[in-house]
Length: 217
Length: 204
Figure (cartoon, chains in turn cyan, blue):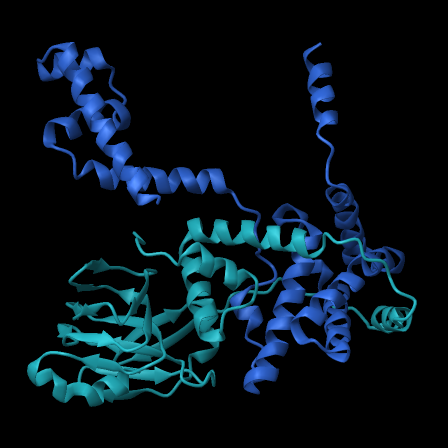
């Protein structure tokens, strides 16, 4: 069962179209998996629409709206087939996963590996904010680290555990510099992650792993 | 008698003038969908175009871009009206979705020079369902309750489970457990208080 949800302010920003694409993808995936948050988002969308379209505004004669309207209604209407969700599947390290709708277009991403971790970066071009798919192999741990910025993890398949508990498919987990954790997965997992700074490894020898931190970012 | 007074009550609540127009807007959109009714489209256009323009000006601070948003949104309304289904929501919510989506893609183009038109993957046009919140709240509540049960002392848990999940009566349960009725009641009360505390913490 999903235990970690985006805060309502984040759902609100998502429905208003104000979140960056990387975070919007994460919220969208969560809503596809969580009927509770999906209902909240639907309510918020309706409220936003009511608010936006509430003002009394008349057509102004300065705007050449009539020509625009004529052009639009001259367009032929092609019957719209009911859009189907084509399941898009990916195979990573001999495991097959079905991607959620918001990620379906990224099925052909290029994967690169480091040890037990496979990563595919999403070409969203949002500056220092990086979005990736990460696959962690079975019986793997990522050593103790903090986050210089924030790190969002949306678990797409499998589960993992850290000091604060166990995470399952659909969980929406945001961590920042205050948190320190070392996630472990017994059977392996697939995540969507967004972060705005490299991971920072904190304990002993694993400081040598800071290059991995940059790989995971 | 009863019905008349209900009607009277309904009349006291003066609806927002805009809420009044909603069923009409739904009808126009359905007419565009089924018959490509240009007169109905003109009504939608007159209602929404100026508001979309105002939204566009807020987003882009440029007249030309705001007009692009009007053009594209209304054009999509014309061409995709068949995807609208009144059971899933109001026409204005559906049109807002189209406007928000296109505006999101435009902003991405302006800010990040990306023309990937992600929006339809993020917010599918054909399933912005009206909330069935009661049902979902119940569902969540039940899930929280079941989780909370696990943390109760065993004797309280046993009683709460029997009464609420197995729907036994207090008397049946007292006989089953061979304890006085009063004990059942006090265990139940203690258990429910603990659960209530937990739910309140959880919902903060």
